[in-house]
Length: 491
Image (cartoon, rainbow, N blue to C red; front, side, top):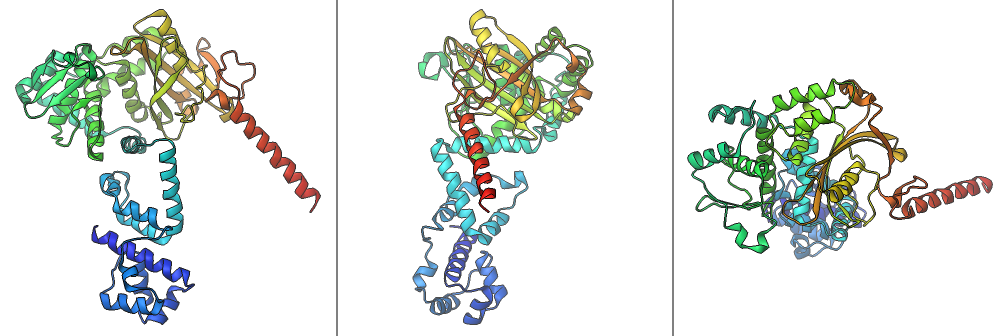
């Protein structure tokens, strides 16, 4: 263990022993002859006493010396010890969030019992919901995105530097052929389009990079947009000089947090390259200034870039907060198998605060009034290549409204599987000033819930389950009111 953690564990044990013996720091100072400030430094994990001082404390507190210096913690402090002995604090770059590791140590030292309860709760939740290490890393990156409004100017500038260095015209559509030429000529890549198809188990992979030979293996079914994104991502790894990286797309397993973060950086770079900020902002301005929503123009804008609908919607989450100060938004990706009633929320991002809808781990039924779900139902029946819809969703229980734009496409790698990508913008004064078409009466208005089990909408024709959770909550509130009346009556 690192020296600072050894100091902290000794400090935690000393504070626990002192507290159990109902001694104040002042009292322990008088008993031991050590200064109060010195003892305080020990308990906070900032200093470790010499053996003679430990022996003296052991004698005065009537605790065996070996017990005091042991790194084993009792039941009450065991979760904190497990945390400190694990690599988790080292694996996550806390400085990304403006946090110093010493600050966490101070927090643990100042309130070990409360921190222990908090850690135990987190562990229990993680176990209950099967919250893996990879999911924890992904959640950390998502929080990092949200803390920065999902806009990273240093990466935007790197894209501009790359375009200048390699004579890439960002005002025109960038082809995969051009990016492939850069990978081969500049970075010594070999491109293989025939190997992955030989392995049935790899059907879900779009690409595999073999670093030793610099060979990029590509799946046969990828389209032009996917190929371009993969190439742009590989360019990002090289141009940004990223060494600790992932070698498959999508990822299989992360070894450490840096790989997760670097995967995000490379993806962001690729999105910014394929959908340049200035070009997208210019086209969005035209859409936003119209008095009514022009669906054809929106689709034309989406198709103006060599990028998938998912990349386009993701890019909106970068640009809208920065260029238009639209910071209250969410991004969702659903998957759905035709002829089934199951809709899985696979990816989400919330800027400014936790918006509805959110992923639900309790096997509840997502609201069938969501446009994200409806476009999936539609495309699975009409077999179009792209299904788009727009809706103003009113969450009655939360007193909020969102403008939601959603696109659905077929999953090219799975039979009868479809995906929907959605972005929801909180309707407030800020949004009303930016989007003139918000008053367009042709945009469908719809009362929605989060899940059927929590929904208060009566006589809903698409309800999949009774409002059991809501009914129990209503029952509990009724009981609370009756108890309150009884308390007043028998005061």
